[in-house]
Image (tube, rainbow, N blue to C red; front, side, top):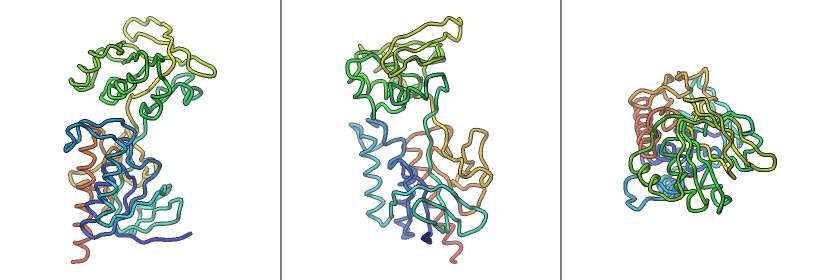
Length: 309
């Protein structure tokens, strides 16, 4: 198995990882980025990002990821389509085992992001890919002129629900609470859309179907009333869980699995930094992830400079 030694190794190629790579590259540290499964991170799955500065008309999530990558590579970052699966942070240089071989890293920036949470109800696993989806951009087209349900109450749920309206005949947004958490502009846009419907204080208890989704069993959390709702598809946007399992027992984490960092993006191990949704339980925005990535790279640069002086 080949072994490569790098000054800065970045795990993850979302906004945090690519911003970190850009800053480390401009510091002439020749960073290497291991992309993992998704170049551009979760943001790449978003059809249109309207709140990233510099794009008054909005920008496609995949397009923004490509721009991040090109800019980082322009200054010397190396983006490897590779997946890390084991790390040893007990001594420096840190060891990262990936599909292509082993990396030795003087500093490590963790930007492994997060994955979509599931409802964990009967029928969800069986119907995934048969009407259950976690990505409107990926699967919205398959629901042309069909009835669709979106579960969630935050920005992502509203953004994806609005995206699906270009295909579906109707989109019903179901939320377990009595009010939505999404921003006011998104809520206004959705409530004014003729294809959008809303059901509050309700949870999905079962997904019904054999070859494809046919209906959902619902329960009102206040009254306990149960009902069946016919639908052709279910899109789930109820949050994300951080991709940090690889670092358990090696870094300090919150009860929810987010890596603990200070205001300099430093983790509990000197020389290891974390940025983006792997370390951010609060904001989960492209712009904040990019800022965290930049901060992590700046601090890694200072760390290496202090060693050399």
